[in-house]
Length: 464
Ligand code: ZN
Image 1 (cartoon, rainbow, N blue to C red):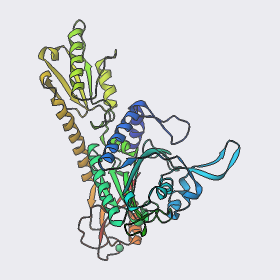
Image 2 (image 1 turned 180 degrees about the vertical axis):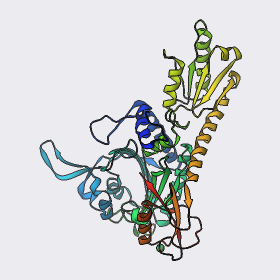
Image 3 (image 1 turned 90 degrees about the vertical axis):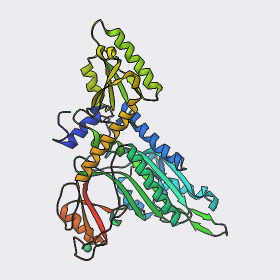
Image 4 (image 1 turned 30 degrees about the vertical axis):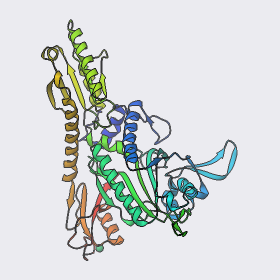
């Protein structure tokens, strides 16, 4: 990288994603990047974490077609308004113009709900809890940015159907718990807000956004949870028969995330030496580097192999780097790729029956070969340290104010709840509303725009 993270975060980010071997941005379609093997392995590890959460909470994985007929997309009016301008259309098959245009899914509501109407017959079919991990397409017109704003998106979406509003509300609460557990594992301190009505998901009854505060002091939305009520089930006619033979529309929810999660990890934990990966998703958790001196190679190489075997047996993802490169070059490569723990073994370590351990955030110590189990604790401690640092950064930049004033980061002001006041404040500080903190703390005082009694806190920030 030819800029430091402090000097120019966005440029540092643009460079580090390629330097760390996550993606290649040279594909000749704007906003469509190539996942390199290393980046894709991390993406799959993130997918595995959410798949595990889905399994734990009784969701089943599906995989729906990419193309959606225009007539289905037209069914929910707000939904079209929200996505219409971002849609890629398929109009031809060979020379033949299609009778009906098809679109590349920007999200999958319309594809899934057409079929949910066939799958759901009675109350015994509910709740229906599904998810898929697929590519979605959005014609972004703003400047594209790897993982953060792209036109082909690696996307996770859970879709559920329930008997009534209350059961759908329970699902929203379960989704909030899933998000907490998922982002904690990824060492990403987040903020949750109920989005204001003028910024909710197109077609939703309400939306909860999950954001992280990036070092640029702009927020990045990394997940969103939506309560749809009957907004989609009515146009798509998804009904069930209850015990008494009456028919009702289902209540629906969704939970969405994308490759932005990786963008958040790169942004929050990386430094001028490269990215830093939480141990749960690092393709390599421990890299072993032999420090060789001429004539003493044998015992060092042997020790490295033994340590590799012992750690692999403990269930760790280990790599012994025996390339013909200097140790310094190897340190550089693995720091760039964010490996949490590096083990160095030289002749002196061999003599002492020890190894030298260096974490990605610079903690260094010797540990005895008899106590290699300690590395589990070192990985956990590393995760805690990077989490704490990111938490401190976030907390330093959330400003609770009684009147509106420009600050860097996130500001929170008392608000009467009226849209016109929210929009007025957005304009005055040139930020957008994140919404009402979720869960919501008690509020006192008066609306920072109109002076009437405040009913909520409103958070505002600049965002990606
Ligand atoms: Zn007001």
